[in-house]
Length: 454
Image (cartoon, rainbow, N blue to C red):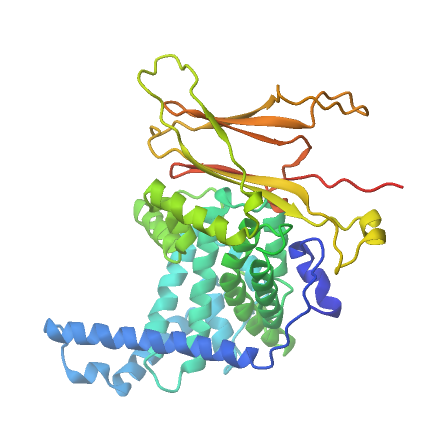
């Protein structure tokens, strides 16, 4: 992103963006076609529902699906909510007012920025709003001259569904709370073009991940999942901004408490269903058989690693465990060394891109499969001195430049690896991950960078 837009994506910068921006003059056209395709899909789904109802004898008469009947339902919906626009508005009425104000100069628009209003709205009100958006969307997608309005309601719905998912999944996010807040702040400033540029930048980061171990795949995939939500929020906010800039009358919002509310059982189930609606293949891994999920993860890791020397071998040890009878099971595991060229000042002086320096170890990634651990029991790992190491670091008096990392779990053999002894960078943004889920322990980290001194 160029010029003044640099600050808006600073939070996403990963050291240095080495890849030049790919010029794509047809990007906006493709984005528009994609949105129209979503509308066409919804129309096809509606037609399929109509056919299903006809087969069951549930269609009252043929006129219910005519354009005239649809327009009557459309005008009825508008009348239903236009009468409620006087006075402070809820989130839905604010969304509706943004649409209505484009053709009615007397309609007042909420003075609070849409992303802030969205974040300030309670879950129960978000659920109410998404249901009302669906009422309009189900009608306008069938009207031949309402494609733009269908696009608006679709983005409003996606923005609310994304907000619900954010709140449901935030405690489990790989992103630090500070980074999540910085990303949220971008929703107030970014333009649609910025979001599309960001999408291209993230795609480039993931594309080059196998060639540059400095790039943390987990982090960028987490960001990538948020981009459709980003687009939908910014789409609605830009409509609001344009109206405010044109001088439409404003009103103060009526805010419901966004946190600490007690949801009904029905609302809680609805929120969970919305939050899970767009879970992707990676997230569905938590519902897979642990061994199948492990195989899939290993295939992905091997596809990223072109140098077989970077596959780290470990040893297994059968240690006595109180109360455990019989032979212990050896867990399945995969481990990878993260390497990269270091371009500190010394290497910049003595090497170039045609004659790069030797790759240096940057960190490690371990996958250990424990498919049969009881619920509530988690594996553990710890660092130990390496008894076979004989080298001495004179500067620090350390007796070893390597250590052992031991993975342990009840009823399983210990698995031990020898790794470089350096200080870890334990920040999630820089790739640290320590997670046990669905029978698989993932430990991934990089070392803190050493600055070269003359």
